[in-house]
Image 1: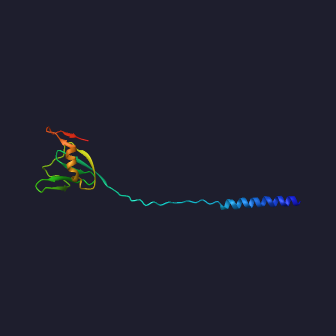
Image 2 (image 1 turned 180 degrees about the vertical axis):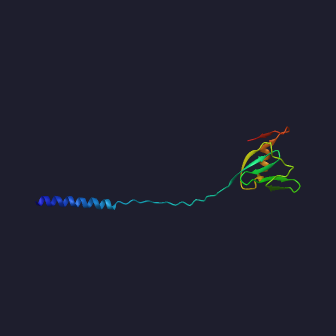
Image 3 (image 1 turned 120 degrees about the vertical axis):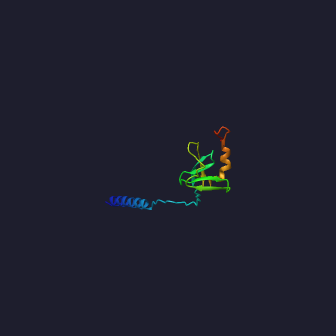
Length: 123
């Protein structure tokens, strides 16, 4: 009888020890926070009409053209009657911002107008 009681005592102790070790098991989740700086650039799509040297902002519907008498770039909803962009080639350009005409010298070089009026695109 003593042996049975001792055996039950040992089994109970092992059961309690097993439960205790199961309860001691914890899961640790470590979250590391890194500081990141996010810079957002709004990439805007424009159509460039090299024959007229005109830009069209696809999102806003605004045109930008160079007004020679005032020597400034002008933003309008409708082009003056002296400028027509119908039935002429257009090319898509992207720019971060609203002042796409700042890249006009590069666009003039890239979209070169030949003497016969055709546009040669350089990469």
